[in-house]
Length: 285
Image 1 (cartoon, rainbow, N blue to C red):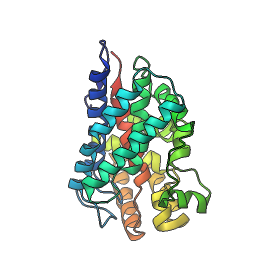
Image 2: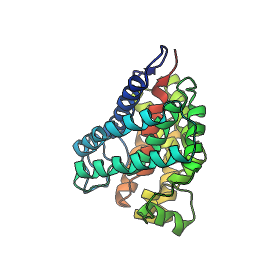
Image 3: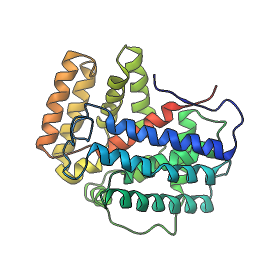
């Protein structure tokens, strides 16, 4: 089992912010290193990416530690309101600029800044209430508020949302991260209970997200046929018992071959897996 963040004693705002930032950063690094992940950067290869490497992903994650720290510090015991939403947005955009400077302009963790930043903020708002569903609900309240200073950029993800009329990262957050709460976390715990290793359990959690997520990274690269192939392939692995079984391992290889052939990578699912690992490690004793 990974080490959890325990908040059993009274912490200062600075102490909590430091711990949350460390936990969030490590979750991003662990997601990047986790193997095997179909189409994604992992400890074996760069997957379907030509511009990403594991080293770049790790450096990108570490560049965001200060952003998570500032988000937690700002949101310490504060209610969700317009002022908080605008500052969360400003800090997130500053973190994105810092990430881009570290990576030479390569988008490594833009989606993760959104999801992880909201969850870090939500923990700091009420550090005494750390059930995952409670954290996700607080994050949803932040995400639902308007940010008048948010630039109206038309990203690949927003283009896919508009073209295919599917929910994107914003809608996932505003709904309380259902792919984390209803799919990834239950699968993570189920696989552990069944005796799968920690890495196998985490891959199963990723696959649980991939069974239904309208991943805009996949849609942008391969359209609806590639998305449906991802959904079907991920379901098949889990129905076979997950990646801890021989049948599951073989089906995962088939899924990986298909996604590489389609030149697709489930980046949205990877962002949600990192956020899942973060929530899994936040606990009260």
